[in-house]
Length: 262
Ligand SMILES: Nc1nc2c(ncn2[C@@H]2O[C@H](COP(=O)(O)OP(=O)(O)O)[C@@H](O)[C@H]2O)c(=O)[nH]1
Ligand SMILES: [Mg+2]
Image (tube, rainbow, N blue to C red; front, side, top):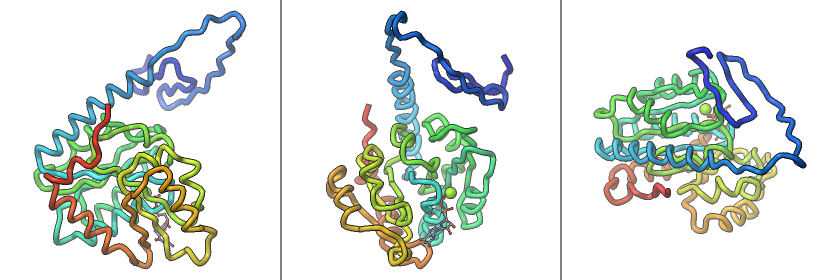
């Protein structure tokens, strides 16, 4: 067994020393007794405990953290860049970027925009977890930061299940993705505290029925705080930036918005 790499027992996927093995399980369902293994519950509980510690650490240094989730290409890094620019003389910002590979260009974009940035390579894993965020936080100059923007892995499924210790979970939708996404990803849309609808500049060119989309969101997450905007044209960005400044400014009162449910 090599020192590097990891094994996920009971899973169909193993990664050993950079080699990914896909294993086909041939189980004869007629003779095998049924066993239920509560692996995911235990793993999620352990994650919750670390998320709680992350929250405590952030609170102790007076930092507010936003967990930004979206599909690949929805505009997570663009929104982070625009938020850094919009707040440049008001708040000191740290950024945690995650990608499934060593490619650190999004962290570099945030750094060029003016943030202290950390790149987290999840090595193929489809979401951040609280342990990764704990390690990333440890690399940031916490005493020189007011706000941490976390760019989660681009997908609308896995990140929804993993608490990080962030104060606000924010979903970034974008108009070219289509208006059906709330109906297809209810867990993500139902679980977030705020929603950004990015790329509104493309509304005249793409098939995106705002009413249909909004009805889907409202059915899952009634009254969800929503920010339609364009990172390209900058329309709507002021309202988003002012809101971020307000939640950081009023962190004692608002900071518990995203409750850490067990
Ligand atoms: N038209 C348009 N393109 C955008 C907007 N925001 C981001 N993009 C583009 O969408 C692509 C993906 O953006 P990026 O921020 O890297 O997305 P991420 O993968 O979610 O981090 C890039 O080509 C951006 O220039 C927007 O508001 N309007
Ligand atoms: Mg990105």
